Image (tube, rainbow, N blue to C red; front, side, top):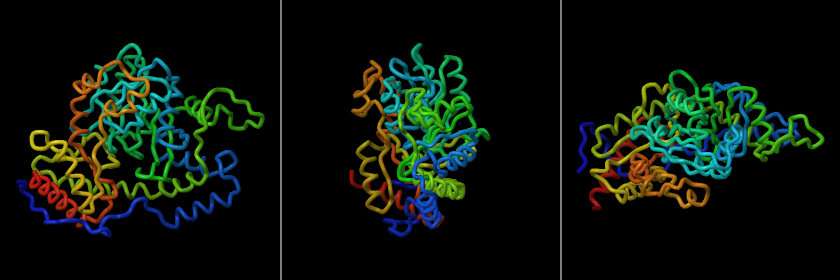
Length: 402
């Protein structure tokens, strides 16, 4: 049975009012929506909210430019288009990630090549990328998993060595930094999501931060049907798509961005507290943290069961137990190559079995991993202590049910 040195409160379940709700909003969002409504222009051409949000979001992430788009998948597609990536090209992606990372590559006719992640923090490794590179590789796309910033310097050096580009999937990491460098300040394009569960949200939405004026101007054209900013005669000067964000979403996101720094600080404190409380629970691993990551935005609180003690069925039962006990929990993403969609688009010739052999850590994350919603880390410290006790109670119930 489960024993640990640090005594945790025996908590059978959390009450519904103990955890903060998500999304969070107040009169700031209400006034912002009215402001957008009353300006008389509800799309970005003629309105002010999208451009103001782009400026504020770029500055927050240390970037000189940003383009706001309809969602995170569109953001990744736009970043790929900026670099001219398309049919026949290969893009290295983490095997352990949400499917949009690989799906966006496939939507442009390119081939996503899954590579393994670090078993401690879940981010793409330089070694796995090096093994996956071929003459057709055009880009490497790390995901800052749960807000933990990947080794951008190492991956960028590898990309330069092989003549390809680095594109960051920063859907989990608005405002994250490593070695004192914000993700948007790195000399590569970064893609963000504002979907309903993200750290800041307008229900849907996305953005791309860009390192220079040239990539910004190209991104702007590509996200608005190839149409220049001041055009009134339908001068579509390049291909592209319509991925423009509307004024209402931008107004809400400006309000969400304003409260994000305080929320990030709270999540950092609560995550450290929860790490300590769960550190000695046998068979349970929390996400490891590279000390070079200055700001871990803690999009999810990642947990993983040990393979020598638990099975995938145990993991599934644990998630069910946690949900029944008032804890918002979910199983981890499966490796992208184990989804049906992966084989529905352009894909490598490598079999699923071969990919699984190459991506052993991603397999473990998919089979034995779970995550807690980031709103749990906005709770008061006493509630976080009760949360830890609830996790242990749920895990004990799983063991007793065997």
